[in-house]
Image (cartoon, rainbow, N blue to C red):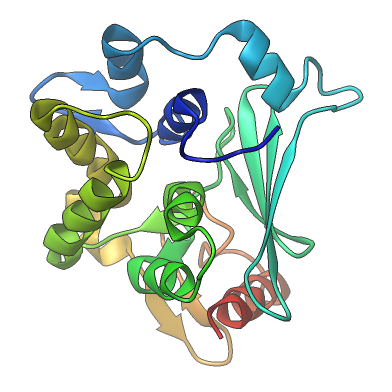
Length: 218
């Protein structure tokens, strides 16, 4: 499959990769909102992207070379997307999701360094990203801007609503102190439990994931 933001099905699939995206005003999640307002990808289309089974898995992998030392992979499995930098596991969107990983600054640096398809890279890495309340305006502006680069042709109210949904996936206002802290000789860690950067992880694992993230930014 050619995976591009010109494919409406793929755009909707990407928007379904944000398990924390919810809206208190609407009292619903983004994954509930989408099928109420859009014709979602068919089962046949999803089978082609993710494969029909995990044993053996026969879905597609998106591969994007970030620089001379780091390649980003997104494996599309039934019910989850799994992410890697090189062979270092970053997280997944499945039932036992592991996501909160990249800082907003790190995501911006990776996307801004890309000269090939920055909007697609943005949408693939955004589920892994943590934002802070102080970054909200910049995050909302970036999400809205990259939504305009999709094939969805959103109305103004849809653009505003989906931006609000996706922003909520990044920013947990009540857990601002849990975003990131810096540990000497290790680098950034987070107090969010569903993360390969969780501060309780062993030093070796934290160092490995931090090293490949820093390499991806160079």
